Length: 228
Length: 222
Image (cartoon, rainbow over all chains, first blue to last red; front, top):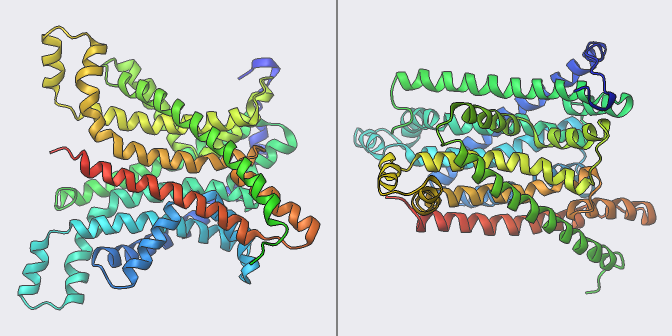
């Protein structure tokens, strides 16, 4: 990368390591909260969709159409710039987690809907025939099977949430991308900072997908995942 | 009911912004499709090295947040004395992501076609390009089209990143208008303006998503 006289100076990275580490922590924190909240939203709304729960199912469908149908960048700006006009004031960290949770939740609603829909009907009918009440059938039969079925898609959406946390830099949430681009803007160390960003994001994505495939393989070894 | 006076000029500007968005979207979609098809087909050639290189391209541009790719193109190229108009930088970032994702779909769709189809076509003397164009791609397209349309929807949504580097696209103009109104009138009007941006993207995305679902039913592979 020495073209046109650019000299790569790795010491710049060490110099800014404390700031970058702080940014990474914010990325991880917001992503972790966003991923967990998105999974819960997806579970509740996905079940409502799959079992056609009146009202909740329609609300969930509208929610999915809205958040999957609009750019996350516009969603972030709306939450940050427009909500205060409606009398809702959130600080930047709250907007950050909320934006990730709502976006990821809309994808997870579809993921869980498909998973609940793929739970074999025979298992549920057998449980019903044995006199198991509906809420127990859901908790003990549908949920464990659906959870295994949803894992790959849930994992992909979670990885997307992690990557999308980079968008939060646009509202000055000081996560990794924000910190790194600020250093680029003030000190012109473009290649050093983007090396950090590339290695960190790719590392996190690969680590997550590796962990995910391990979990999926582990569950598959115990049966039922993938081919129900 | 009469419109407040700020509405008309803002609407006119946003219409122009929508034009810029359409331009970024058209270029990004066209280039992503061409590049994605080429990479996806080349990856199935059986050349190990080629497969590896394309695999790395796919992992890299799918693994990076698009906004990081965008900032890299926008900031890094000037550092090596290469300047691009912002609109081209935005299109490049979107195309890297789009072509990588489409290449995955194309590769998967081609590999889902039974090997016998390749062999039979080769046996009756079809060259590789002819095998691809006449035998494999028409079948692969049935599997490919619905998910590819899903990628197109995301590409259209991704055009909004161009506003971050100063392109006056739909979102960019909307945000400028909000800023200007805040300065001149003291009111922000973010709800109606950003709300309009949401509604337009909502309409485009959900129309195309509905088309994708319809195609999926129509083209279902037995």
